[in-house]
Amino acid sequence: MKFKKKNKRKLSIAQHLKRWIKPLLLLLVLLVISWNVYQYNPSELLKVSVNWTIDRTHLVDKLSLEKKIEPLANEFHQLDLHDIKHELELHPWVLEAQVKRLFLDAIDINIITHEIAAHWQNIACEQDQSKDNCQGYVTTTGLIITPKNLFYHQQEESSNAIELHSTYDLSKNDSLLNEYQAYQQILTKMKIEKFVKSNIDSLSIKPNITVILGYNQQQQRLENFIKIYTKLRKKVPLKKLNNATYDMRYSKGFTLKYQ
Image (cartoon, rainbow, N blue to C red; front, side, top):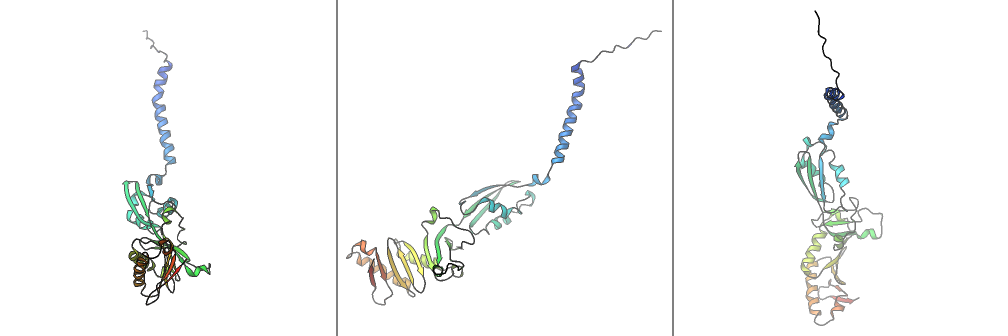
């Protein structure tokens, strides 16, 4: 009995490649997965992305705010927007922090800073520069900010701020701004540039008018100044009236000194 030999054909190179390509691809995929598992850092996937908008970056820089909320914005599943808002608004120059969630792992923060109503200086510091709380700023909301909180750079919006001078620490008495506003309301269109409160009140009014009000009945005396100034305009050249000192401390009358 004769047995037929099996017909064995040699496989081509293409057939060999086809036979091994699937195992090779599977091995490559396994290697990539293994590498990613080795490099995997779970905390990276939990990080929160923050989109910042700050209206005055010369007052508040993003880096300082990021440090303040870093413990609160570490992982998105632990985000508390109210806590972040509260922490940001502790910054002396932040008036309001608007915090909104954009996505699961992203938030939007809009920072609105305080506007300056006045520059303040302690008169006592003119003789003794070693004193604390020598100068600062009063915001339009009445908040007192001193240089130890953060230095306020001289920008365009600060050039229109008035000057407040007093012999006491402003942080112990915030009525200075209220008194200035009351005086300005009486003067209406005449603009106060400087308000000095020591043992007497005095105002510097544009363009170069000084009004001494004394230590009592200041508002009444300021109203008297307006009446006198209005009458004098009919008799005295405006150039002279606007470069003069008016002392209103007299019970009957006033003194006028041209500069």
